[in-house]
Picture 1: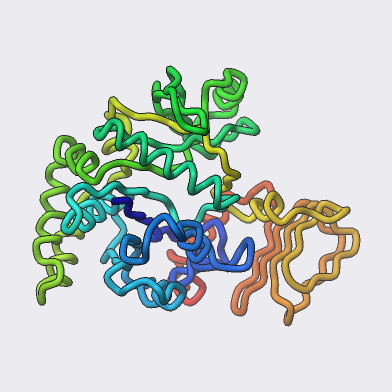
Picture 2 (picture 1 turned 90 degrees about the horizontal axis):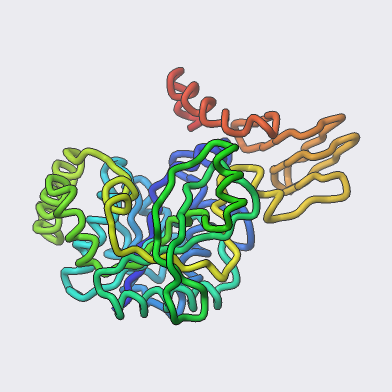
Length: 358
């Protein structure tokens, strides 16, 4: 049976000041008519039931996610006591879905991607699930055909063609980490590389076996958590054992060592919504190259992204290539080409103890 596992524990610091500790980007409405996590769950409608949906987040977000997704049973939302990266998150999910479904197939995905149309996404997920059914130990991921030499994504190099299925699929030759500009250009020119979308399909048993081989100590802690799941000791055991885990990504823990991995060339449109400049790609620009969300008056303003609300007017004079984001208690004004430094702002606020702005 297919189960969806949605990873929703990220902090989204590059979307500060709109993204905060209690309302990170996956809980915001940045593109479209709903929050990112709401769109992610809606995209799965018809593929999995609410009972077959598992959201793994952090404890402080559980109540907010439950309010945004009232159709999910409380048992479908798991709040981690601390951040330990994607491998422990996925391992815990694998153990939980395996309790009642030993043959479970997991579709693992982040909560903050923009994907359309839904029909093509669902068809690709089903194609991947069919590939796993044909080769039970196989891991299937989705590659995004690159449109420019991006330095912000990991890459997947494809190998031999795998026959069958509507979307082209290939054996994975190797995974590559985020490259520098020169290497990214080489990847683009070769035509053999995809952006790594971070979406995976595998049997729960496959990922658990891989963790048992490569991360046995981690899996031991996770097994103790699940052994007490649903008992009076659940929270105490969860906190103690999960905190003891050394965090590691699933890419390092599993994917770099996996031997039977396939990549499907994604037939859908995809964006990882990495920062404020994503709004220009997804919402479009006006005649002056501006992307505006909310009430704005711009004179001599070009190439600028403005986000406010309909009750607060932002006026810009002579701005070029800037980001302006207004919230109730903080406003960001930044050079658009220095977007990565927003992370430094968040760290500086932490160091000053200004928690009310985080």
